[in-house]
Image (cartoon, rainbow, N blue to C red):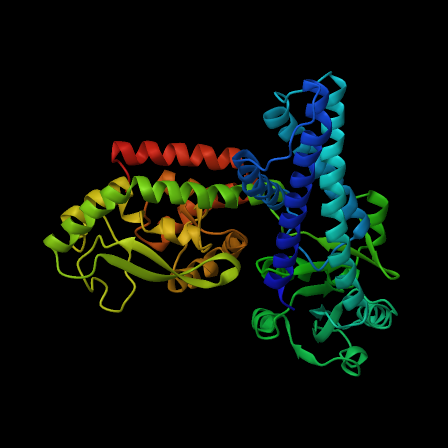
Length: 471
């Protein structure tokens, strides 16, 4: 199952649709609208303005689709919902284009404005949805024929689990779930499911199972009396990039606390691990990349000067890289300008403390102003980090934190950040106790995440950097 290839199809044909509609719209203006204004036939010449629009307009459309989240969950498409989403996005986009590019056109009467608006809307919507309908229909047919499937894990081995498995696995037009096994729960009868799919382990093995089996979807099938295990299970599963389904209680339906998605007779609820609205999440990522590129260019002279000073005042490399734990618990290498003497840790993890003799003179300045973190803009651009998010820690310290604060792992739902709420308050932590003191602020960010909060944290970070009173 090639996600990138599928996304590329939508991107290419969305670009083609936008280019075709813009070309036909350009011809329509020249052939129909402008002659009404000037009283003569206007030759159709593809000017530089047309070619500029042919490049820029489709890119603007692709950006809008990305922000609205169209290119996510590409294998879980509803053609009806796709129709509505395409209609709304096209309507908003055409309104923006109309007021920014078309309102000053040469027209014969105000009626021409209506003609221009509806022509552009019909052209763009028709071509865009036509291509999308073809791609989505082909994908759905492949799913129904079991040519495309999503590795699915069943958690639980009770009668509910067996019933859901049989219903989902016996449909003539399946939803694409390919059950690779189940995770057993204490006091469940594993024999109910083991005749159909293998038992892969217990709750303690869940993390390894998710990674080794490349699990894309999880179905949690627990009895009411087993719900005390739900929090433990969700703590593990929600921190991974998987779709989670659950079997609701009758109370959930009566209280109106959940909305259901009926998957061929099995009423399952989708347990979302999304923390921000889709458009905010995509806008955050877009801002991360664009602002990081701009910041990298602005700070390039500062970076060069600091690199020269680092190299001239102490032995060792200019850059310092260290393995950290990022989103969904995946490891990555974080990059910094070296602020300590080379081999400061001698292979044993050791956090910096006040008046740490391992920190160089220029390193002390960089830490107070956070200039040592300039290379992390590269981490943001490639997707390992965000501008704002909980600071990433090493596995060595995470293991110690989790023993005292198990909920710490919830932070792995987010991309780690160059700066954070806790970072603004505490700066660099010098021991595990300070990491735990900083944790409530990161948890508050997790529960209140928004673009507004991000901007406030960025502003406070800049203030700390300019004042040079960071830790």
